[in-house]
Length: 324
Image 1 (cartoon, rainbow, N blue to C red):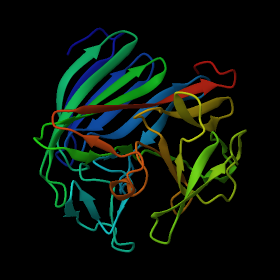
Image 2 (cartoon, rainbow, N blue to C red; image 1 turned 90 degrees about the vertical axis):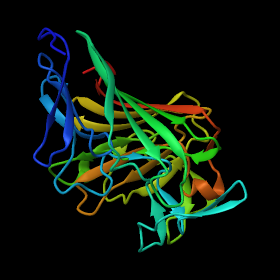
Image 3 (tube, rainbow, N blue to C red; image 1 turned 180 degrees about the vertical axis):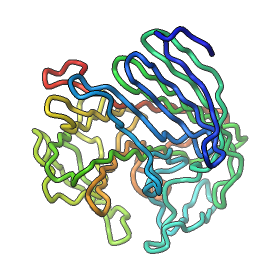
């Protein structure tokens, strides 16, 4: 993997916990991505340059990390009510890992180990693909599938593609999500946020959808977050473009953009969450709704040997709309 200094470089090393870390970087630009291959192919660091500011840590896994920070949420994001669902005339009971609300939450792959499959390292882009195998690992989900995650750094920022490939002889329910957090040195209240008009789902006291929703346009034109309490799921019902983009004013002249490819079979749901302390924001793309294993809203039924792919990313643009 030795490349000239003008190209991206990929290396691996063991951290202080004995976890294998993939390290992708471009020394000339300051772009860098660290991925923990031992713990779910979780991004532990993303550094991107901002003109006039320097290199910033866009994603930076804290110690201790927030719950499910930067993790891939597979085979379901968010919650399954009581951890119970019915699929093809059979009942399945998953472990309750949110006991205060009696739900199963955020899937089973945060501790799954991954291996590097291949890499492509060029002057203006660098990327690699990792693979992990889920094989009947958790109670209530007795299926087998492969997870391929492709990370790409280029002039636009970070692009991630996740491919879920059935290796089972029977069909399985499948949904996907990602749980990145952006951290701040101060409270997020004074930051400017732009969010397209989307349906906001109403939830009950257990954070399970009631079936009702309403159009949410509060941040459509951009406004200061203020005292807004986000722990909300939004659905792409009216959005006409191929991308859903959440924009955050991250520097005096720069916007931090979290984008997800929507449309038929895409990432048509989004969860926003501000944790206690208000010094972080989770921007979570999802392919399906909360409790999709029961309400089937956005749920994919993955047939034997079938595959599904999702795409999302992070970019930085200047006030002019150009790459920053």
